[in-house]
Image: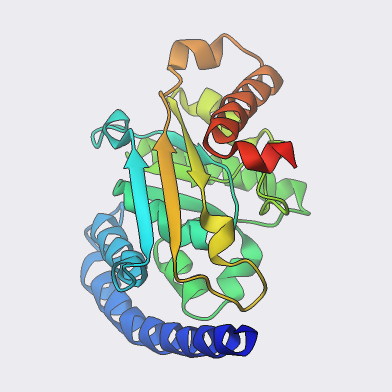
Length: 250
C-alpha cells in the first residue's frame, strides 16, 4: 500500500507540475491584458482563484466545509489572519472568494510558477531575517489596504509541526492598527492531513474553513499590539481546539 501511495502521489505531483505550467500561461495573459488599468489586479486574482481551486474541484475526495463566509464583506478591506497547517492552505484559502494580497516569505518567489504568480499579483514578500524587510512589509500592506485590497497573513510565520495553533507574531496586528481596518480570524482544520508525509498526498480528507467574527476597529485600537496579538491568537486557538480536540489531547 505504501508503494501504491507513493506512486499515486508521484503521478499527482507530475500532473500538478504540468497543469500549473499551462495555467500560468493564462495567468500571464490575464496580467498582460489588465495590469495597466486594473491597479488592484482584481481580475488576475480572480484567475488565480480559479487556478487554485481547480485542484480542489478535480478531486471529489476532498470535502470542504466553509463556515461563516458571509462575515467577510466584499466591499471593504481587512487584515485576514489564519492558522497554518500545511502548504495546501495556500490553495484552500482561495475558497473564501475575496480579493486579497498574500504576505509570504520571499523564498516562495523563487519557486517556479507559484513564485511567478505571487510576483505578478504584487503580493507582499518578506525576508524574515531582515528588520528592513519587515518595515517594508508593513508599508506595502498599508498601500494595498488603501487601494481597497485585503491582506492575508499566517501570523505563526511558518507551518505548524503538530497541527496545533502556535504562537503569533505581531506584524499582522500592527498593520491592522496602522490601517484602522477590522481583523478577520480564520480557522483551518484538516489540511495537515492532506500532506501527512513529504511527497505523499491524501486524496480523501474532510477540511474546514471557519470564518470567525471580525474584530472591530474600536477594539483593535483599544489594545496594545502585544495584547491584540495574544487575544487573536487565543481566539483562533480556542476555536481550533473545539474543531480538533484530538490534537490537543495527545
